[in-house]
Image 1 (tube, one colour):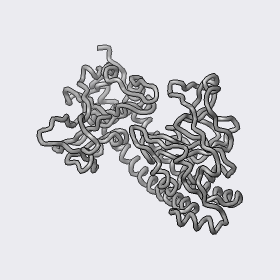
Image 2 (tube, one colour):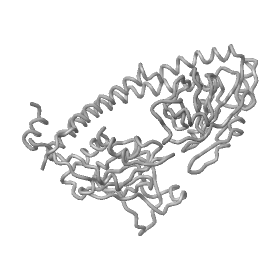
Image 3 (cartoon, helix red, strand yellow):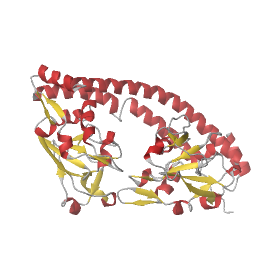
Image 4 (tube, one colour):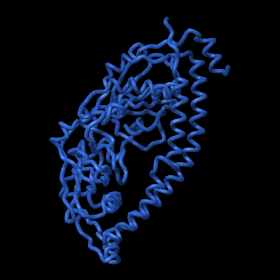
Length: 427
């Protein structure tokens, strides 16, 4: 019997007590009353949404700042606080947690799109235990069930307060933390090595991508001259048609394939022949489709960098297109267009036409103004063949470096969920 089993047998032989979050502490909101200008030249450390989303334990080595006036009353984070993201585009991504596991005298201010759960008594829950617990499969399942919405989902703190969590003895918590932290450190070391290699390959891929199409207007013109081709606006070689609206609530398990705008920069690559999502055929009949050979392009997103990415559709079945996307119909190699939509020069061109707000967006006219070199179809095919080799090295999740990284992460998740599954005491 290993040490953890011995501790559980000795300290909680009849199971572990489960308690609701409402019985263990309270929820608090983030910073309030701030304008956009307050985040320029700030004087206090600011914890961003991305920091919370990306890190089970808050990363304090950041330069994000907010302006706090002398005497201003704002709640600050405390050691042991569990911070949650408040909303996301899908319920599965709502309520991602991060824990302040480091004691610090520095005041930390939380953004308004997140909220905090603070334990009344840290003597019953180690912060390092919380960082693993609240990201476990079972906890993520419970938290996602508290989210509701249509185009964007929001977590209900009232429902989250009813969630029950295991509260094992501190000795058991410490042993689990030691096991998972050791595993995480070993995984992190290998993942860092693999990630560095993957980053190098991606940089090489981006270099060749930009070198073919040109890193500046002059270079694009030079490419056009070398290949005896034209440098023309994207809109002059095809037609951009906006999709029609549907929402997450319209999703079905099967039915007609559809592409949601959020999936274009999180799920799809250069090309696809199968969609991730489905809607009912009855609803699909009222909407707009992309056909084989079309390129579907993002027309809206949460920041400028999300705008303009596209995927070449190669599916034999037509696919419904969301109204925050455009379907580009043309007579070129679809992947030649799709690769172009990933070049730095293209994104530099379209950013001037992106309108900013809560959601950034671009019109079909704005997209169509971007200049693109159009060589012969044979030259397009040659370029695509070369870029495919680099792209597959970097992005094929079924083999190579990304698969190794994913395997390590899945291995950690397996052991974490296994160690955090406790029998429940009847008391």
